[in-house]
Length: 443
Image (cartoon, rainbow, N blue to C red; front, side, top):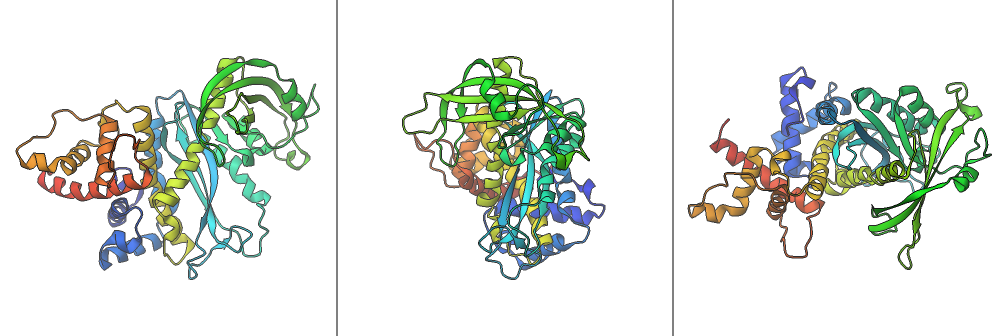
């Protein structure tokens, strides 16, 4: 994996162990650690790496974060979508330092991530990843210290993203807390959050509900609504309303955030939804100016990209099966999951790149050796009969289909684009072929 740089570890052996571990997990992304290791000596090395006092999740992810910043450079605006996911290890009775994560005695810990996207929704890389666990006996509802992660992530993202790039941090209704807006105002970045509270306002309107009801119609727009828990993906026509508001600091936050925050409320209401479907109605709060329907439509579309972080967590949990890890302590688990984060991001990026830019050269995602190894894996019979490798790389969509075929995808008419698990199996076969390719073609 090219995003695990040796510069992050002073000890060359640690850097090499990280590279070896990431490669092994990429080869067996949905297998257990013993399956990925293949032999006891390699498995022992993985366990020692995850348990090393000089190894931590932040350090493991540092090279990937630097690569992410490199991909951000040149973008005038970048989006940072953030969310929390629970990691359950209740079936791993011997694991230490876990805590309650639900009301049903489930044990595990939490991961709060932020993912950088460009304004088309293309994933650029992971910006932050924070782990924590509750103490046994703590209330199941998140306490105030936990809620701070939303505002702290706003600050961290602004510190990571280059200053000449405007950053918009996007969150769901759980991030509708005053410190998020105040922190963005203090740090000189922007936020876009779905409202959940009917807040008291300063000025003409007494509360958010009244301001939203009075917001003038700016126009309409058509956009694709992503699939939700109770909604299939569909194209919808949305009426767009917007209004400027002033949010005074609640009493609980006046000590740290004494100043009011100037926001825009953007309302998007679905017109004529399909029969039997609940119409979408979103009320969004943002520090961005909304002078016209054009900006309102852009910001609502950006909000739909929030689901990218959920897809990242899904890939991490379903594609990589991280909740099946059998490591003895939370610290070891966190280190292992940090490694998997790098692997999961690459798959997510590949999936969306193939969807958004199918006709681009595959070298925008794959190295020269990788696409040639994929070609060999698919066309080995014709190559044995004297055929040669193509002189030009294939398109990205073609290379992705070939990769999926390595993982067992049939690529029949009507099958659509391959899913997460079959691509993972393709990556596993690719790594095996790459070993042979690199021996035959040393750099």
